[in-house]
Image (cartoon, rainbow, N blue to C red; front, side, top):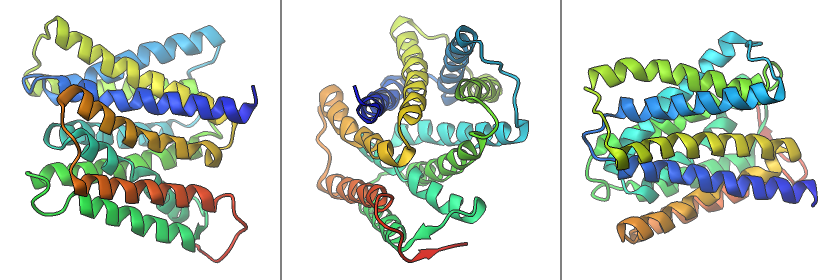
Length: 289
């Protein structure tokens, strides 16, 4: 099997696993506080990443503690916002808005890492924001704070992935996943206590464990995909999570996406394709911040 094909299959599998995380979260009753959802996500991830690092003999001592902390704090807060947003938005809406994060990565990489932002990427970013504006138009979303939290999650996730790009020079992927998971576990403990953590029953425990298992499996599969091919060649497959979310929304809740959600998601997917395509074209005019 060609490495490019293997990378594509790994990224498609990663998108499938990550698309099941919001399904697990949305299936939980409101009595389960968001801190508890984050706690299981982090604890399961830390155990799996620790086991993977130990099996491969990879040291977990951080090469860049400050970058690891920044990545974990940004990513943990983004996940917290995302989990709350899932409670008030449909699955397709929440996942589509969350897919704005790669565009924020492009913006932050240009601003902080000295990477150039091409004109076609600027156009793709504008198209993506138009798509999200259509999805979250007045009257479509019942509570404005959920829309703001979803957007905030995408911004913070973009910052976390920008830090992750810088971390490639300092730490192995298993170490990054371990410290990210460990730190969000520590973040979740006080949130769980303050939120009045509930002892879950058997179905709730399965959903909480599924949140952690699918999340860390998706992360590890995505990491493996980037080992076999450059990010620009496989990142596009990550947008399949939007398609998966529509399928899960229909399969588990029997809800078809609204016309505005379909239109907005189509624009976001198109913008993602344009952003991916421009990385394979000759360099043109670009912006440098």
